[in-house]
Every structure is written in C-alpha cells, then in structure tokens.
Length: 212
Image (cartoon, rainbow, N blue to C red; front, side):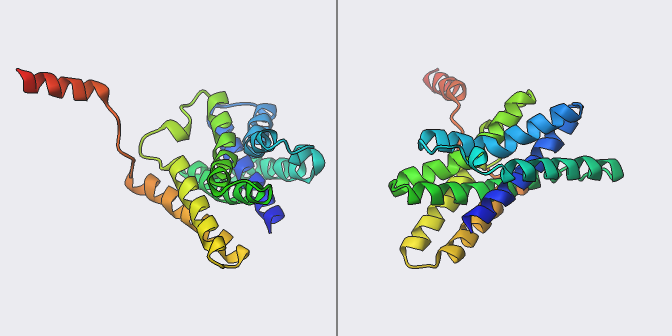
C-alpha cells in the first residue's frame, strides 16, 4: 500500500506544481521542473535524512514517469478548460495526505521512535511544496497564516501511529490518517482556522498603554 501512496502522492503533487508554475506563466520546461521538484522533493529530503540509498526515485524511475504523465495531463487539461481557483490547494492537500502517511510508514519501518516518525512524515509531506513555493517566489504555505499546513500533517501522522499501535490494521489506520490530514487542511482553507499568533510588537504596545 505504501508504494501506491507514493505514486499517488507524486502524481497529485506534480499536478499542484504544474498549476503553480502555470500561474507564474512559465514555459513547458519550467512547468516540468517545478512539477518534478514538488513531486519528489519531500521524499528526497526524507531519504537523505534517513540515509536511504539509492533515493526512492533513483531506485525506481517509475516515480519520474508518473510525475511526467501527471504534468502532461495537467498541461492538456488547462488547454481544454480553466482549472478551478482552488484546484492547486486541493491537489496540494491530497499530496500532503498521501506523502505524510507514506513518510511516517517508512520512518516507522526504519526503527525510529514515534516522535521521529511523525516528524519524518511531516517533512515528507511539506518539503516538496516548500521548494515549489520558493522557486515560484511565493511565501511557502507552511509559513502562511490560516492554512493549517504542517499542523494537519502532524495530526494525521500522529493519529495513524496511535491507531496502528492500538491494533488497527495498517491499511485502515493509513486511510484514517490521510482523511484526517485532508479534512484538517480543507477546514483551514475554508474557514481560515489558524494557530495562535505570536505578535511581540502588539504585546509591547499593550504593555506601554497599560503603564501610562
């Protein structure tokens, strides 16, 4: 099942990368580069940190073929009809769900603790999107308010590990973890739910007003 999750993650992240590149009016080569970086970036960072060699897409070039196929499909689709404004966010949320759980499973099978498995899952899910946003000269989604980006990955990965260690079959725990990531992410997008904000300037101004 992990292999299927990886292929799905590569595919939908490639779509999100292609859509992001299209919004920046890049040529087809630029679209392919951004799609590729988005699709394999998170897994590459994970494999480097875990010292897994060869890197997953070098060991199995099928990932690159899926990425290129998803990019070609996206190019064809956008020439036939204009994608919905939130299509990028939807594709990114799905990729985040697939890759986070896959990354947590790989870390778990590598013998890491539950805390490191959650961390590796989150890194796998968000690193590709971060690279995409930086290359497209955008503030990475993980740093934007009201997105619940990495937070959703952490919650979903933690739920997956808790359910699995409680005796839930791995497939069911994986699906529930992915669904949680997608739902939390969509909730953040639709209702602008955000974590508490640290604002030192406002705190200092409030204290000055109180001291007057």
